Length: 238
Image (tube, rainbow, N blue to C red; front, side, top):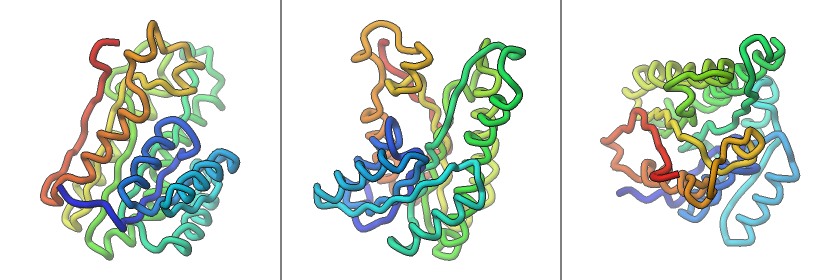
């Protein structure tokens, strides 16, 4: 397995939950981490924590559904850390309800964040990876992006789209030794899952952000010859 030490990574939605756990895990491997999220308080606290533990972290705030804000934030982060070797597209949102119950604006916002957010951030980082002829892009989808169900039309549509984007991009950039992966976790113990009442029974039996982060790190350490195109991850016995 390859070492991640001295690499640089950009993690979106890094203030809490999955993004926070991945950023912490990357920093523990010696990766310099750029944190991107909407709420400054969360990512500043995480950056301070990483730095106090001997790591390197910078942060910027932006709504990933705003292309100009993303481009400005990425430019500022790059000025601090240099080019990015790793991109974790984790920022996402989810509001659940019947097809006719969700307001069109809510429906549209989920697509803007969950799909266009991935597009905007990747678009801001990809040229430098292509120039370097190396890089890892991990897009966090969901098992709801593999199988739709009642009351998840907007969320599922956006997460299905992440798989299509990821596969198409992978085919396009693999010749530059850039690995593009889409991961589909099932329910993880996060604020989103709790607010949507998705955690049933003992939360200790359900996948935690730190568990998922372990998988992300293991994947990034695979020999550069190997590409994990996509994977679905479930709790063993929730």
